[in-house]
Length: 232
Image 1 (cartoon, rainbow, N blue to C red):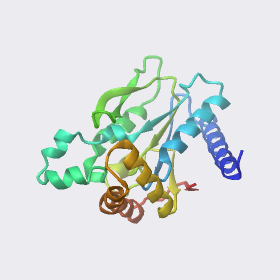
Image 2 (tube, one colour; image 1 turned 90 degrees about the horizontal axis):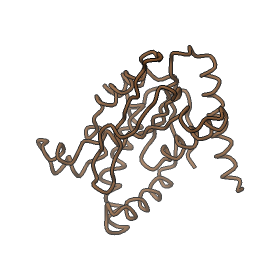
Image 3 (cartoon, rainbow, N blue to C red; image 1 turned 135 degrees about the horizontal axis):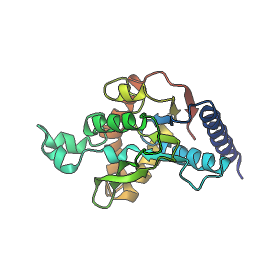
């Protein structure tokens, strides 16, 4: 194990144990809700998934005690973007806050704040299908036995409604602070590998005209959080 990997593992373990302690002190009818946010390429998905997996290990769960829900499913569809007053800009800026269904996300958080009872239903979140490049409704189950829900996404600490309303319902909000050049390098590789752009130059142009504009919005309008975590 490298030093960097060891540090990441230590961080994941600390955060998982912190959530475990929060859960022990929580009413049995209430879930623990955690949000993980940061600029594009900061490592939100990796961290959220790793913390959920470690927490399930700590409580000997089959993988359902803690779940990680990505915000990708709350992208507006391409048809919705095309119906906007300036569809060209909307499609190019896909990933900006205005291209997400923030109200839908807020409704999900509200539903997960309802007290758990023996009759509590399974709640579903949308996913994102990268093959069709659109969200898929009601695709990720959040079952009653899932007592910890970790959300990860760009705008979960944004000081603007409805994101701020959802943030107010969290037990804790975490923010990953990453060097922009580290994020840029990740995004270039990601955009080319996913086929969003044909080459490195096009990836750099996209980052300049979309991703880093979003990063500015995220950094300039961040709510206070309980954890500022180093990006790696």
